[in-house]
Length: 352
Image 1 (cartoon, rainbow, N blue to C red):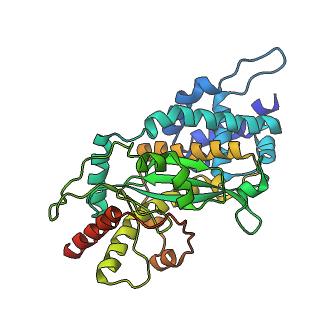
Image 2 (image 1 turned 135 degrees about the vertical axis):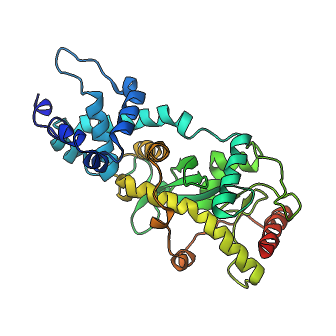
Image 3 (image 1 turned 45 degrees about the horizontal axis):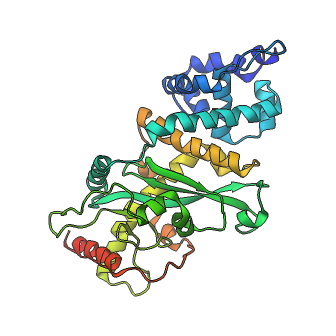
């Protein structure tokens, strides 16, 4: 068959295997990581030959899918490069992405236990000097074209359609939780309200550690950090309103925002490696979800095996971040308990 003789896989793969740097640039991971990934998902993406045609090799399927995730190029382009049918290329991408999520997420994105949360909090303290922090939460818009649902459900603005990827990251920028909301009209806080993570946090179903002393204060709750679009809860702390800031509130906002931006940096690293998330995907919403989740779990899988780039390469400028327009969902007046928790953190930071 042509793909076995002149397709990209047949002609380029031997060259890539002989040059580790080129392989990593093309597939966005080392050969060692690629081979481990292939071994992990191989059974899920292997098909039997028939009397009419030979099945596509699992290695070719994986390379094709990774190239799509890395570049976001059209299925038509993949069809020409890999000498497979247009529909075959599309099906291979969905098949591989489904396998990646199902096989990797139980280990690479397992829900944290109480013991895990204690370790995560220590990492936030060591790396970012913020005590009792369990994660940074934020959202990233994923653009899609012609979703297979009602236009109003996805319409955002300026004629584009989108879904929202909500994520919680640890201190190193790895994802603890990810969820894709298919209602593009929701802002971050709206996504949080209806997400499984948001419900688990508000219903007190997460295995959070008991309140702990920070050394210079009475025991404080363990908290997640969100931007001003999120609700203020006992275990979810957002900045003070920018109006009328005194020194205490200004210092708290600086410390909180510095740590919360870890999730922004994680999104930056995610989209820099997996370029499909930078583009408008011309696929159904369900397939866009699958592809997005696969990219997120690959983010953890690759970084844990190959190290991490410096956060500074992806950090947003402070002033730009503060000027960025936000949408605020009205959750009503925060409970006094949540206001008190934030005030106690702010008072602590005035002493340190």
